[in-house]
Length: 194
Image 1 (cartoon, rainbow, N blue to C red):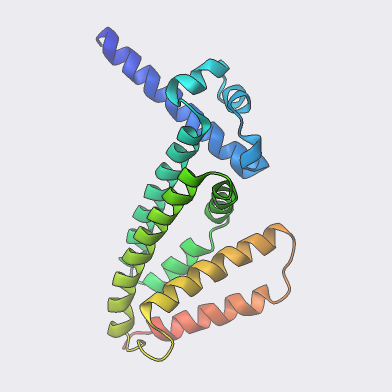
Image 2 (cartoon, helix red, strand yellow):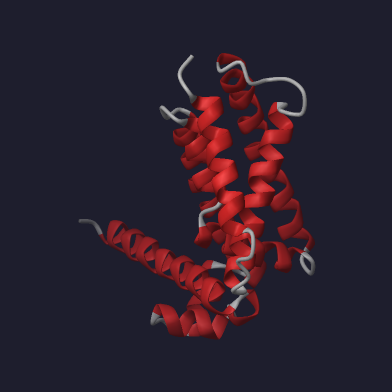
């Protein structure tokens, strides 16, 4: 392996460690805990390396967000292409770690315009992809119409899924079981073979 190949591989490993460390700290302690010193300590590198790879913390936050956003977009595409796309989409919308991390980024977005813009950009991409797929899925199952437009279904799944995760994190559970049962039964009714 040439010297430049070795440094590129090392750069890639270090960058990956910094991204993973940042994500873990954000999940465990919130975005405010993800300082350059804390990220470096978690990754096992010198603090200067954080700024070598990411000139400022916004660049690091954006890299973590973009990577997670792409993973979520890919998962969404897999969910929508599955045999039970509505169940798979609901599972994605109510997945705890993804929802918690998104909430941290949304809190960070209150203070960072670049983060807010990036979240909006990706949210529109997710929503557009969902609406396009849901339009076909709902029509194929004869479930389109009334309030069940693709846009409404997309927003409901995202909002309800995230809210349940947030309340679960606060040990609030009243009504959660009944709501999850209602959603599951509703999805079963829609996805029942015609």
